[in-house]
Image 1 (cartoon, rainbow, N blue to C red):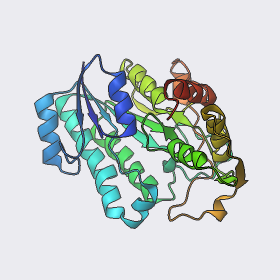
Image 2 (cartoon, rainbow, N blue to C red):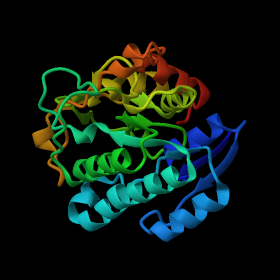
Image 3 (cartoon, rainbow, N blue to C red):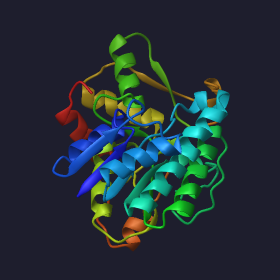
Image 4 (cartoon, rainbow, N blue to C red):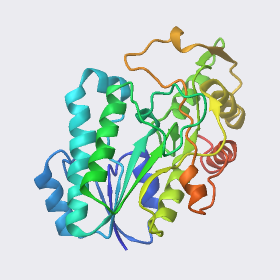
Length: 281
């Protein structure tokens, strides 16, 4: 199978390409293709002729999206539309990566794939616009929503916490009133690979099982990394940011269950596997 991976220099795409290394791969990033330019996308896709496209490229700096909404929508919405239209024209199956930020975070249970969206940030709105473009332009698609991602080499919350933890000092204050599913790039790459082998079309949540607050996640990171710095809980209000963060980022992988596919790993098991393979992060 010929697979094109966008955002090839990013954390998820790097893992994705390792996972698909037995396929004929082409990884592209901004130097090879500006996805906001339809002609660039058509040229690259037309020349390679992929059977599948895994669309990881995105503007993911959440706070920067608030101050540069034009760029956020250009990359996350227009770029996704260009990729989807090119995928349709060449007959490629498309997997587009999306996010928990398409939801408001106000629900008192995990969000499943059939829940109403309602983003509260520019990042979330631009990613939702990208989802809508994928649905409109490429019928043979999977939109894979992920959350709280970490992976080899970062950058990620995990890598930031490891750096801060190893600096030592007084207790590290970490937000304890946001809850989600810490998820490894390995789990996402495994799930995407499995989905590519199915006829499933539509939106699929692809996070690790189980849930944690950022404070819980940090304590488990420190335990596994052998970091002795104390972790103290704090509130979101104590660390105001330009973009609002969902209080509830939990995603239920309902489509995996309804489609008879294997569940993902529990977040603690995935984190332990990550540190076993990458003890320094």
